[in-house]
Length: 522
Image (cartoon, rainbow, N blue to C red; front, side, top):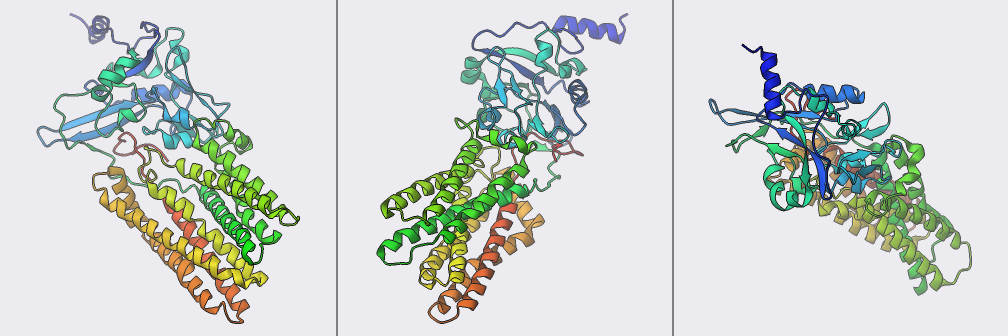
């Protein structure tokens, strides 16, 4: 009679199971093929040996998991079903991490299709952790970079089994070769999706799933009771807000210079300098978001596919051009040339804010991936117009206050409307799981902050400027400057609060997590 071990060894030999083996015997991918993972949910027992083996193989701390086990459940007793998903990198055909990375730190190996990460090139911007709908890339706080699964390619290259596969006692994880064209045309929709997993078509994931038959329709994540605010990204709160204010201020500067053709006072060097100061302060702050800030300049490397690279180049160029424009106000330049230069500078700045908004227009973050993101990023510029109005009140240039404040109030009104639309569309998307969780964060975790946003926007963006307009015709210079200062502080605070909420309330697409540890992300 066979022992259990002998029986298991015979079963492995008969079925060709890869688990428990030090060597792997699969054909090398041919042209148009690549390696992929196969996960058999009917075999997984949830022991998490794959998680442990992966961490040990790659010397990762406990909080950095390249492979994770998620849990789902559904049905009613006695037809209750528990479903597990062990997932690492899906080595996608169109990986979002690779396209979005500003430093080209991701490489899809032509011969194998494996997506690897170049640790030396990474600056720790964590953009890839936003872009990946599966939440695969993981920030490694000890190394200050992002890391991820590479399918143990160094072991595969010498015919050895990846650690997760070798450790799985149930043979639930394997590697096979897939024909990319056939996968995309025939099988991806049926075999690459499972409950509470983002649509495989977003990145053309290659992982093949074997699922139990007749799964209940009401499958739910067992960690749905765990809802935490996202990282607040304070350096980015200030950087994005300040650069948008600067572009708005430069728009007002250009209008002032244009209107000087019709008898209005021409802006001065000081006013032009004030317009660019927020960008000069904001852009360096973005480096505080990076794990390796001294490599910040390499963020401009991937202009071809990365919106972050485009933002860095455009806003860096805008700051330089706007600073040069300020110097032009001290020179007797030809007015037509000067206006043409400002049109160019403004165009670069507008593109920079557009690129900035597009960083967040990603399927993996539903609450960011809405048109209101673009609209609110642009209309934040009204704060810059208010800033110039305040400076002009200090300089005694009263004839420019009325038109500036009128434009600023229009911008504040638009921002108020777009903020309302943000919340309204959350209410309208009843079937969007992530958006409903974002709505919960707004109403239960950040209710006070949300109210402060509205109050400070209405007071500083509309009521106080209206009061200023009533006083413009009289001799109330000190009072006007004081009111505009309070208005400026109020709207700046309002936009910082709104941007803080923007980052803190986002709920990403991802796989299901565990009952006690959720999605295992900080």
